[in-house]
Image (cartoon, rainbow, N blue to C red; front, side, top):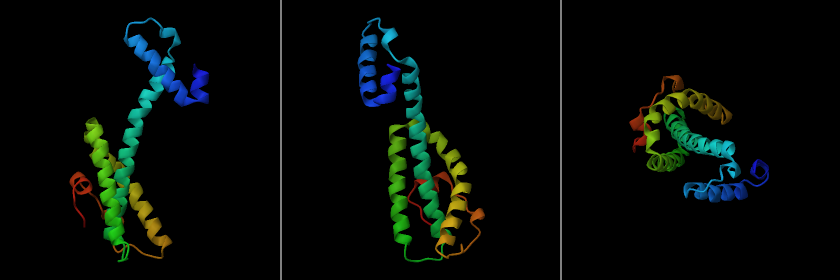
Length: 150
C-alpha cells in the first residue's frame, strides 16, 4: 500500500478512506491499512492550515509596511486590496480552524522581522528608500485582522 502512496496519492487516499470506513464499522482489517502514511497525512493537514494562516498574515504585514514606509503613491490602492484579500483568507482559515486563533499573535511576531526585510529589499529594487525605519514598525493582532489601514 505504501507503494501506491508514492505513485498515486489520490488512489491511495481513496483506498485508505474505504479501509478506514470498514475499520470503523468493526471489520478487522488493520493489516491492510497504511497507518504510518495516514498518520503523516493527518499531521500534514494541521501544518498546512497553519502555513496558510502564516502566509495570509505575511501578505497583510507586507502591505501594511509598504503603506507606511513607501514614498510611492500609485500602488497604494492595490496594496489595500491585497490586504483585504489576505484578511479574507485569514478569516476563512480561522473560521474553519478556530483552534488556530490563539496562534495569530505569535505568527504576527514571527513574521514581522522577515517581512520588514523583504519590504526594504522590494522597495530598493524599485529605487525607493523607506520613508521611515521599518524596524520600528509593529502591528497588533487587531491591526492585522480588522479593517485598519495606516
